[in-house]
Length: 378
Image 1 (spheres, rainbow, N blue to C red):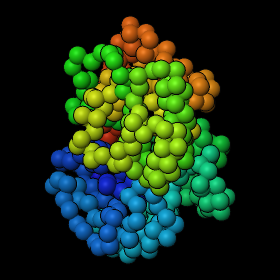
Image 2 (image 1 turned 180 degrees about the vertical axis):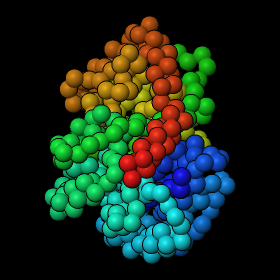
Image 3 (image 1 turned 135 degrees about the vertical axis):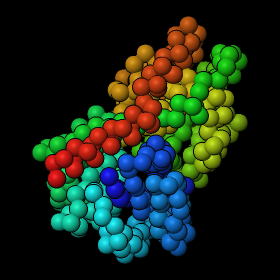
C-alpha cells in the first residue's frame, strides 16, 4: 500500500494529535509492504523533506508560527495555501492508494477536493468536532455545513474514543464512525521504582494551555487544599496562550511557591517529569483521548479528573472521575486518595496494567486494517 498522510499539526507544533501521528509513523517505519508520505507543518516558512525511514518520508510546509500551541486563523489559512501546491504535486507524481488526514479541517478540505481521484479517511481528533470548545463556536457555525460534506465524502471516519464518537454523532447522526484509541510508548513511560506517598503531595497536569482544560479549576482545588493545611504542590506543564493569565492567577492567590508553571517541556524529558510526581489531575471539559493521561498511567500515576471524552475507556480502578465539575469535588477526591495509602498503591499498580492495553503497535495495526478494508471496498 502507498499512503499519503496529512496533518497541519506536527511536532513541535500542536499537542496530542501531532504526537500521536509521529508515534504511528514510528510503528509504520520499516514495514516493507507499506510506503508512506506525510505532508505536515513546520513553525518557520520553507519546504523541507526528511526521511523517517526507508518507507516513510515527511514533507513539512512551514508557516509564520507565533505560538507552537495556538493556531491563529491567518496561520491556518497560510498553511492551507502553502500546502495545496505540494499536495497536488505529490498526487501527480505518485500512485497513492488513499489519503489519511488528521483533522476534518483544514486537512480534510484538501482530501475532499480530490475525492474523485483518491479515497480518503479522516482521523477526528477533538477540536475539529463541533462541541463545547468556547473559542471555536463561531467557526463551528460557519463551517459546519462544509464539515458535514467533508465527513460524508470520506471512505471512513475514525474517532479516538467512544466519547468523541458520541459528540461527532450529535453533529452528524448519519455518520459511520470507527474507534481507534490513542496509544502510549510503554518502554519510555514506566513507573518509578519504590514510589510511595510521603511528605509533600506532588500533583501534575500536562496539556496545551487552552480554555477547555480549565486550569483555573485545578488552581482553585490546590488553593482549597493548601488552606486546609495540606502539604501540596502542583506542576502545570504545557505551553499556550493562557500562560501569562495563569501566572497572574497564581500570583493573585499567593500560590507562587505551591504551583509551578513550567511552560512546554521537551518530549524526551517527560518520563522523568511523570516519575517525579504522585498523581495526575485534570479538569478538562473536552478531549478526544488524552495522551497525557495515557503517559501518566504508563508511569504508574493514579488519575483524578473531571468527566470528559475518553475517560470511560481509561479510568476504572486506576483513578477517580469526580461526579461534579468543581474545584471542591477535585480537592475532596485528591485528599481522600492521599489519605488512603492502600487505595493509592492499588491505583498505581492498576494504572500501569491498564496502560498496557494501549500500545502504539495496536493503534498502528488498527489503522492498517482500516486501510485494507477501505481499499477492499474501492
